Length: 63
Image (tube, rainbow, N blue to C red; front, side):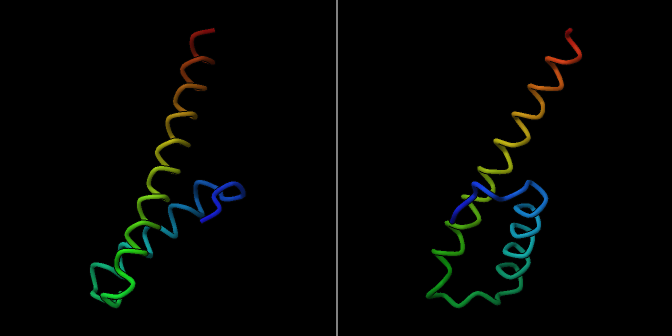
């Protein structure tokens, strides 16, 4: 998955969609591992974006 051009909002939307599909049992067992890996990638991307934004806000508030 290429996250270079992905926005936080788009990643979160994809992550929510994957979660709904998995919770509803809509993901075939053969694709479950791949979907889980995609979800993990999206989650790491979102976490990194939030961490970076938090650091920037703290830096701006500290000045």
